[in-house]
Figure 1: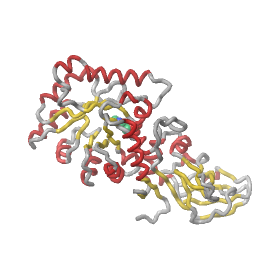
Figure 2: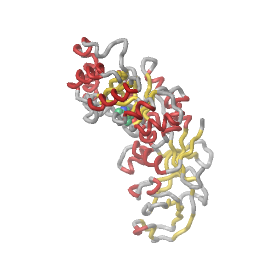
Figure 3: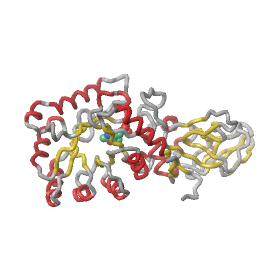
Figure 4: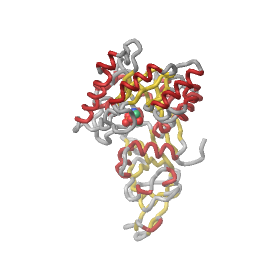
Length: 386
Ligand SMILES: *Cc1c(COP(=O)(O)O)cnc(C)c1O
């Protein structure tokens, strides 16, 4: 429970519908690994993962071992792939996590620790096929596969790559090249001849993120790794074509705390960067940059009150900001304010206004991913609709 007027609402039904839409999209050949890293992009690690598991989810991806431990402690049964924690041997073993590997010393350490417990840990080998970030270089592939084969405490559960530019549908050359390199690598003659990627014991191949799931259906292999699409957004931002329907999962709301009339020529908020041009009705909102509503939104953002857009005016403070509601009749203290999400028209015409994370990202000069992480991690969250 929270007494704050500010709340982030997470629509679990929308999340589960998005997961189902992605399952449909990738078809029966491929499985879905739900990326729930970074507190599920601000939506809440445990409730999101459990909701996806109830909707049929079997694989989950986290950045850190701590996140994997939290999921196990919450009772998650599915496979958990940890992208950045291959040196936490004891935790990986105890909590039955599958690390992404890219380092021979870590592999040896993990294998030794697993042997002591008489188990084998499934590892996912990450190859840099052009992303230019984490992962072994393609030339090291055979060495790593041979090493994994000889280490008694580990086995190869997956081989993965990551795309750098799959959100770009006008410049497809980089993605096609990266896909080609990944396909070539896992079919390479010497690797197959040595039995390093045996058919019977075949590792899961995976490379597709949300952008590739949307734009490149030939990248699905045995597993896909959607993040942003689960939360209802398109990696390339606003106005994109969707090959399947998705819904935004997060809303951010507050309430009006005070409504006041000020005359023309009145300076508003710190520094008086905004001076009223007319007699103005201001709504004071109890939300500011401490709640993730960044100061950089000053002079740009709009919010929804009574189903209409109201501009934020004057500097956004730590815990407060002001909306100009002169053109919206009847605004009163206690009225709901939507900072992110939809609000129906008060006249019940059935239509509704929406402010998306993409629109806010435009005002903040960033991407929807960052808006979701920021709002979600700065506020109390409420889970709806399951
Ligand atoms: C975050 C991440 C994803 C998911 O990316 P989206 O663009 O959110 O779909 C997939 N794979 C890896 C390795 C990631 O780090």
